[in-house]
Length: 258
Image 1 (cartoon, rainbow, N blue to C red):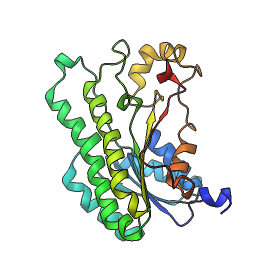
Image 2: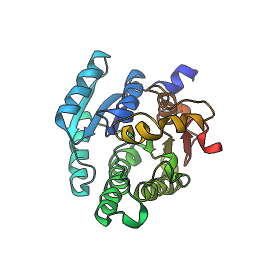
Image 3: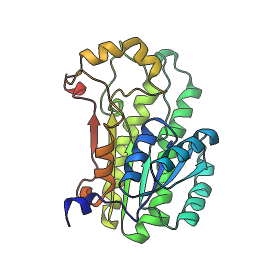
Image 4: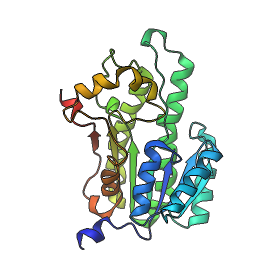
């Protein structure tokens, strides 16, 4: 196969959870540009409609399903609808997630439960659906979990205090490794992308306060940009990444080196 063929996603179908905006939409753009047909999920229909229209302008076919990934009981039904309409699911990008900032001693247990349900349980249930119903029967699949550098080490309390987010993202990294070990024999790879600070709705408040400090301690002296996850996402979703399995790859400009 040529290099172009290795990265080509023509004929593939990809689900991107939390795909209506931010990092999820950026990854959807990349997969669509390489030929994949897209199924986007998110909680808000208006944002999904905007994302589908945006992708259509790029000549990318995308369909949308409203789904709250924090409500585990709804996930199998949504997956079945996607599978029935599109006929296959080759790629799953688990991007939907949330963060909660509070000192650990004051962190609400209710917020802890919310993040576990969305960031960890929702990611597992959607992965389980995709593997059991589509990828294992097809003997081919790519699961890409969007974790975080907060799933690789502790965050500096001077920057953020996000114990539930860190705990769930560490869980996503651990789950990635275990699923990779169990499902590799079926032609499925499972990897995690671990972004550092990228401007988004979720990080805006933090970056407004500490963004300049983060830049100064990052070797590249910049935050993540709108193209910085795209190449890695395509690699992990394509035939080019077939021997990359169970990895958690930081995309943070080298900040975790310091």
